[in-house]
Length: 69
Image 1 (cartoon, rainbow, N blue to C red):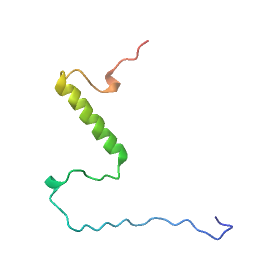
Image 2: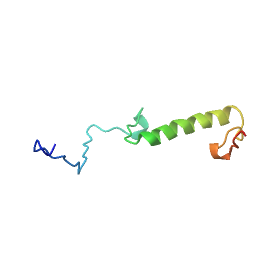
Image 3: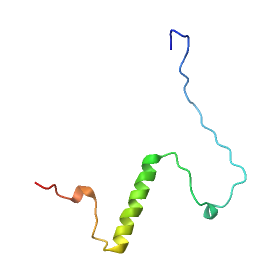
Image 4: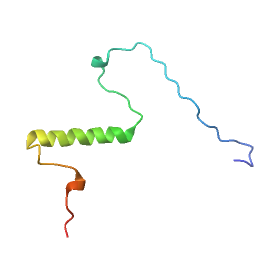
């Protein structure tokens, strides 16, 4: 890039403009820029579903499980 005289630009600002906004209770889907957070929320909902269907103690954190020897 240097040989061609090009420079890498740096993003310094991100601006959004909202028009025709509606109340939060009318929104069907919220857009998120954090995909890792969205994945955690989906997994959390799945775990909650298992707990509701079976028993609250049926599933827990993976760190609490022992490794098979």
